[in-house]
Amino acid sequence: MPCAFMITNTRFVFFTVALASMLLQSCNSGNSTENQSKYSETEQTYQKGFEIVTQNCVSCHSPNANAEARLAPPLFAVKKHYSENHETEKAFVDAMSTFLTKPSSESSLMPHAIDKFGLMPNLGYTKEQYAAVASYIYNTDMEKPGWHKAHSNRNEEKDLHSAEDYLNEGQKLAMATKSVLGKNLLNSIQNSGPEGALAFCNERAIPLTDSMAQVLEASIKRVSDKNRNPTNLANKEELDYIQKAKLELANTGSIKPSIYQQGNQWIGYYPILTNDMCLKCHGSMDSDIDSKTLSVINERYPMDKAIGYKSNELRGIWVIEMAK
Image 1 (cartoon, rainbow, N blue to C red):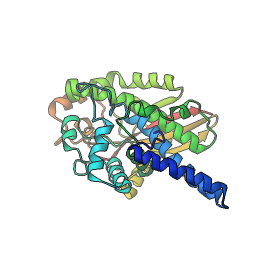
Image 2 (image 1 turned 45 degrees about the vertical axis):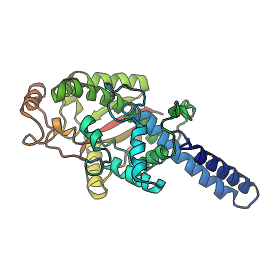
Image 3 (image 1 turned 30 degrees about the horizontal axis):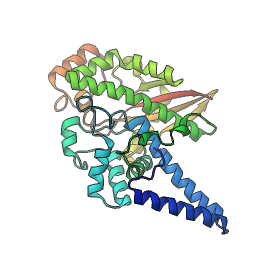
Image 4 (image 1 turned 135 degrees about the vertical axis):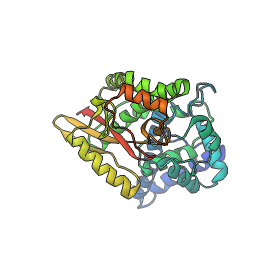
């Protein structure tokens, strides 16, 4: 998300004055490196938040979609609810990042939105990344036209050198693909219920993923240890990561993505977590999946293993292969 400090004119002026003061101070003291480092860290936080919001959040939380086509409440409405309940930036960021890390009806401030759109999924980012998202939203005027275009020029050219660069780039590619699949999946659910979602996954998910891979110039796939489609079964290396990720989720409540180099490629693993909506097709046969949906699953996926999940469990992973 852009480094836009424009919630109000007063805040923008205050930040501008503070920044100017900091830069002048850095020129006239022996602490210039320390001051510039602090500014750089703040700048990086806002940029990180900007990237996640514009690449993954806007597709569902669009301010421009009409009421019928909307898949989630617009970001300015989300910000309004959190601002009304949390006055300080720290309280706002803590509350929003806690919810995003583990979305639940109990921790939501927008029960009517859940009734209308359903509970949002856990997108698989770390709590630090969610904090950057919340900080960006807090400091950005979401009702200002074109807010999402600020600083977008920073992403026009890729300059990848380190493992961390490729790790972040892979996550952008995974989230961009997830956003496209998620939007189509939600449309299928809204139009035809869980059975429509199953038809979409069976007929369109893999071709659409392949199309996104061509557009994004990378190899992109989803795999699982409990696969529904036989082509989505994880290999040994992927299974090793999945087992470690499950332990990490149980011990810490979140999962860190991983990347390694193989020949002329970087291969990244990024977690896919379940939410309440997922359970309609992947939950318990006794309490979550209705008989009609289960019948369609058995018909389309006779070797299905992808049931029995609870909310906030590791459903599988994105595997992103990037050329050096």
